Each structure stands twice: as C-alpha cells, then as structure tokens.
Length: 145
Ligand code: TYD
Image 1 (cartoon, helix red, strand yellow):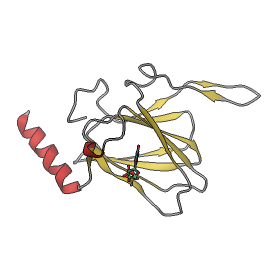
Image 2 (cartoon, helix red, strand yellow):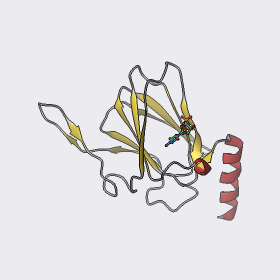
Image 3 (cartoon, helix red, strand yellow):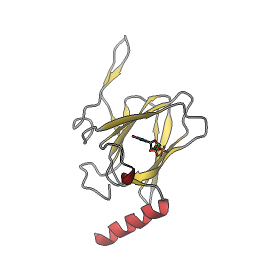
Image 4 (cartoon, protein in one colour):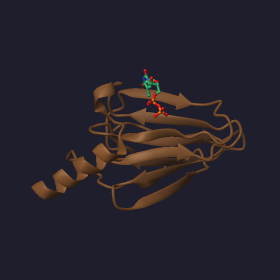
C-alpha cells in the first residue's frame, strides 16, 4: 500500500461470486477481474496446530488475496499505525491485501485451509521480517511525501 502504486490501496474483503446450486455451491476468482493483479503463485496453509500463528511479516511488492477454503481464521493487518482484524470464515470471502502491510494469521480452527493467491513468485528479498525495520520504512516513506 505504501510502497507501490497499487490500484486498490487498502485491505478489504471482496465478496467473490457465489453460484448457488442444490448440488453444492461454486465460487470464482479470475485475475484482473475480482482481484486487481495477475496471479503468479498460489500456496496454502493447512494442518495448523491449535494456537499457532502464521505470517508475521510485510511484503515490499507482493499483493495477495487470502481465502479460507475451509474452517476459519483471523488475519491481523497493521499499517504501522492502525491494526485491523479480518475474520475469514466463508469460502466466498477474499481478503485483498495490497503490498506494504504487516500481517499475521491466527485463531485457526481445526481443519482450516487458507489459500493465498500472490501477485509474485516467491522471493525472500520481498519480505520485511523485523517489525522495527517495517516501522522505519513506513516513517521514511511518509517523510518523502
Ligand atoms: P513464510 O512465508 O515465511 O511463512 P510464515 O510467515 O507463515 O512463517 O514461509 C515459510 C517457509 O516456506 C519459508 O522457509 C519459505 C518457504 N516458502 C517457499 O519456499 N515458497 C513460498 O511460496 C512460501 C510462501 C514459503
């Protein structure tokens, strides 16, 4: 959000299309349609033991969409000033996260399955892993404005 010129600039829950059917429901994500980026990578997090947290870092470039395909969990998003918690508990909710936000995932229910669509290939250099470094970056970015 703070580091690149994304089209969408704030985290938000996107209501994905849901095609209801007595045989079972169906939802859809298309790049550059429901989400404002090209999908370069998909990964998923599963078998999370009770009480564990995932994430706990920021990305310089990567944008992402997080979907709870099964069960539920919370995504805590922090822009260096304000923390927001998004509860993902429906498989037709997608949490869009622009780049430049600190985020972690917690409160995973039993058998939860988190799918993450990413705008980039995996790149360890895109990670900001120290919260103090993240705050410094935010500050220097604001001073340049
Ligand atoms: P990481 O993103 O650090 O997960 P978390 O923030 O929840 O700890 O990823 C954990 C490990 O998996 C790390 O060693 C990097 C590796 N990894 C990949 O090799 N490719 C990927 O696409 C992802 C997301 C992680």
